[in-house]
Image (tube, rainbow, N blue to C red):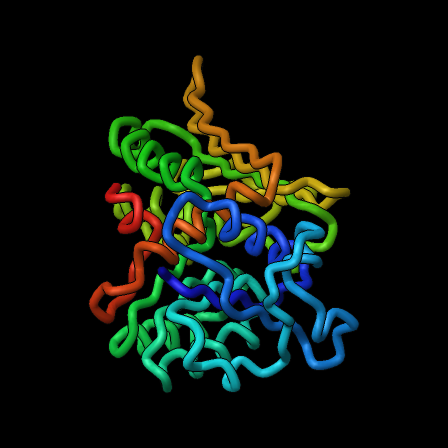
Length: 267
């Protein structure tokens, strides 16, 4: 039995993760659930928070008090909190699945360093469908090459803070790498006013933040006369949670290293 700890268990994603682990057919269960120290949900049964059914797992504020009671931590919180949890897992030799987005470059470097001593799954999107799209984007970029204009559009709920989304940036990174471009040099994150004609080498990003949109991503490869569009639309957070649970079941027992959902799914 794989024992899972879930960080931020009272949040929207945390509750979905509790439900996903509980409903999984894998040999896995929720063993520990954490919330912020000032959260009204502190001490409440995580199952009641997520599904209205008791799991007999009361939420705690300090994961270090339960270090012996879980094998892998799933974290979809914030960059700062995720790094604290990463340090805890590194200290005690625990695996971790990180779905948090919005990390700065120096913060990502800490994740890479920690993966030298513990197994880490780090992915901006745990959705199986999105990770399949990444493979399709790689192939599309290879075939279409420099003959198309490339634009990436994404939409999320009004509460999402980072933009563009980590998934959109990953899509851009995969395409740029396939085409031998440096995304930092070719990315365009918005257009306004009278500008020059776009150059073929750029990769454009556009962002929408509105309502309760779970997550939409479309990559357009456009030439003169035709265009190819690859779209993924998430209608439920469960798609991300199910992927994270699959990653958690897979990562336990792996050698120390930095893994992606591409590794988990053998893509």
